[in-house]
Image 1 (cartoon, rainbow, N blue to C red):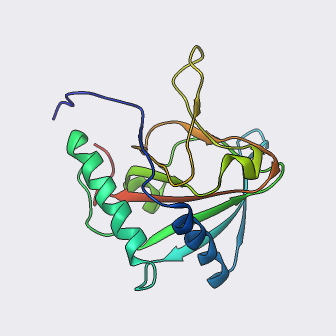
Image 2: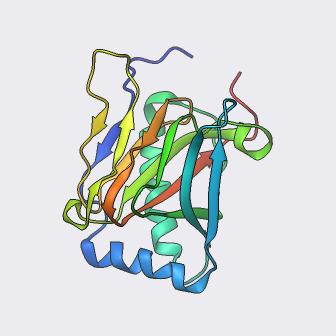
Image 3: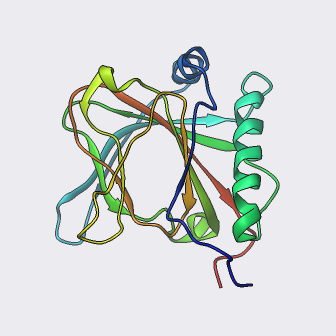
Length: 185
């Protein structure tokens, strides 16, 4: 299949209200944080954050269903082969000095099946200095993506992106992936 168009990402504005964003952040109270630190081949810190894995339940099904609908609509352009289920989301907390350097959401094992990535901005820009998400286009284009509370960023999982370093405060985001049954071919 040939794509009729290609965009590095799409922003779906205001899909979650501030109250819903706070409700999503509160889900971390039901699970233990996982300190996530990854290093690149040279030993530099690539990722530094706290993760909370949120399993789908009757209590939070509304959030998964809304994001699944957004992902399906986005996929009308690309026609990636997708599974019909999302069972887990990653709630991420970045505090002062934390970040996640340039990466793709593809990887080995289960991560090789990722087709569409979605990031929900849960905190207001006033709650932190620095932080936020950037998309890599090349050296000549500003990579910063402006997201407001409740906005959803959607992009193919092979797009390079990063969560820039938080200088102060706390930034929360919700990340999930729509998977296929097979890796990209």
